[in-house]
Image 1: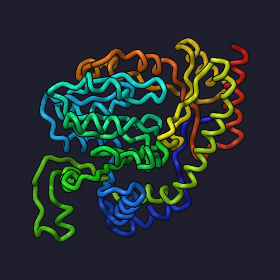
Image 2: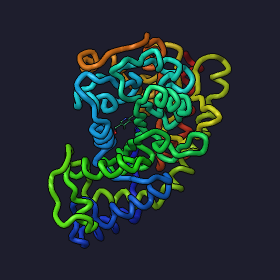
Image 3: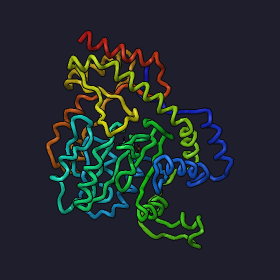
Image 4: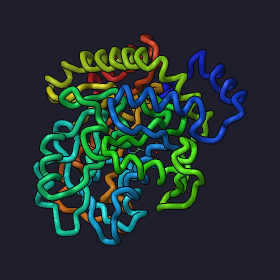
Length: 377
Ligand SMILES: *Cc1c(COP(=O)(O)O)cnc(C)c1O
């Protein structure tokens, strides 16, 4: 069976995990967490970068920091993972869904302004497949209406918009290091911001609402409960694993890009024949090879395609059930536009296996089986 994803593992993973144990500091913010923080501050050129337990945790931190009141509204796509919405629902806010663009499958910036009401407090662009949303337009709308921009950049490691790293374009950014993402630690995430006052509060929110980070830096002589918060910091063991992966991050990215480009070239003819559509990456956006997907013509074709791949021992999942049609989405959220593109994409998109350890032989098989399907259809 060719898996859809395989977690990263390097020679250093065990060594760093053993070292982290020997440090006798296995709670949060130890040696490896600091190494990861330095790495990300430099890589993302940002003021604050804090490891979290997950992308979900980073989103929850941003929702707390947004200071929302019950009934406040947050504009986001419906075509995303449930954590994008859940984080705000937990604060009593109402996610308001706007349809996506047919090319990038990202929040359609042209539909945002009409969805703004006096209750709107934030816009949450999700950089789907690591391809940036139209951030200049989104930031301009946010500035005009005095809204926060919180980037769900769970899929956006090593991706850029007009040369700037994703997650640093709005007020706050939320990365995921779940094992299905380009860079991973099993579960894990990162909160980033360039805003100095949000940065200071973020440390507190992440540490159960205490000023413990200041205490450890010697800036206060005892620590206490000063704000809302929860426990969003990972054990240093998780950071040790993540750090081992960061050391091969460039190699991982090169390999993923190679695999992505081979898929892209292989399906050019099928696209010309109108059978499928390949990903579209606008000029101002980079490609981090997070995902390679194909868009089929309709649901029946996709169902048959996925079944054919499975018969030939290839795992190729689809996603998402749009949040506006999920039971919790119907209960907690509101829809501001029609959802034509979202509904169509969720019925026709297929993701192909893409991970660092995928061999050439395995990828060739995936491509051959895909070609056979359309030849025999
Ligand atoms: C993976 C993902 C998340 C959640 O990240 P976790 O680390 O699994 O909590 C949130 N949003 C998007 C778009 C994702 O792809």
